[in-house]
Amino acid sequence: MSDANEPVLLTGATGGIGVEVAERLAKAGYPLVLAARDREKLRALSARLRTLPNAVGDFPWFSVDMSQDASIASFASELSTRDIRFRGVVLMPPQDAPTNDPLPSSERWREILQCSFVGPLELLKVAIAAMKPDPASGRRCKVVIISGMSSVQVMGHYASSNVIRCAWLAEAKTLAFALGERGIHVNTLSLGGTLTPGYSASLARRAANAGVSFDERLSEETSNIPLRKYGSPKEVAAAVEALLSPFTDHITGINVLHDGGFTRAY
Image 1 (cartoon, rainbow, N blue to C red):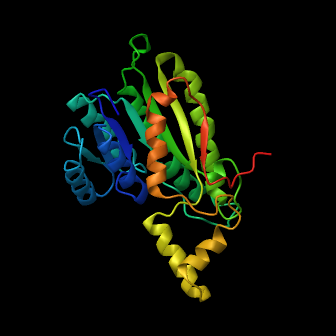
Image 2: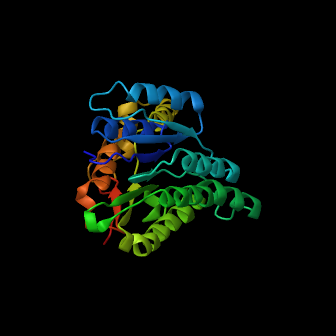
Image 3: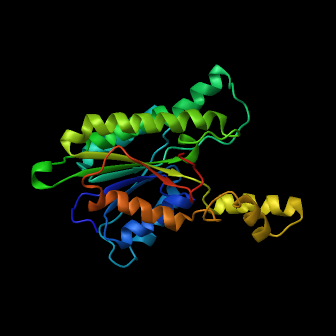
């Protein structure tokens, strides 16, 4: 449970994973600031969080498009105006769609980098600037960056994502060294297959096209995972809460694999 008045910033708050993270943290007593692009979804999520047990604060929200510099600048200005200070940040950079193209055009690369790395990194810089840790008094700030399994194990059909996700691991390591003395911890969470509503719908379509049941298709797809299952958004939310908690008071610069054992490190 959070013991501070300062909120945690949650980006991608209205997505399949973001909603579960928001609800988990709200029930644990964390004040939150919500960020995503869709205003109506943000408004509805904020209202729902206020009804949960142990909910703290009003759950303010900001419509932010991480692919647009002007949107991030507007977010920074609003934070300054409201004098908002963050105790933590959960950053979910937008994921590039799977592609088998190993050599995207220069124009496409610029688009991918802006949307999935440059823009989110600029937003993270804004959030870090709004942190006021004080290690001497035990006051530490936590950054959790959610990436994907191709950050540690290359996936052939995630060509551009292989690059972006590895870039986030490298940047997180860099920030862990640079910010550690200030009491800011930076860790990453690499997700394997996760049964978000969107992925479940995609799996159902593949099952129908193959003439098999959803469970049969799921069993086939997870046969190479030691735990024989995909993760759930609720399980991701539990991992995020742990990385924000005192559990990581002496941990920074690590990458947690949340993939059911899929990645072989030997």
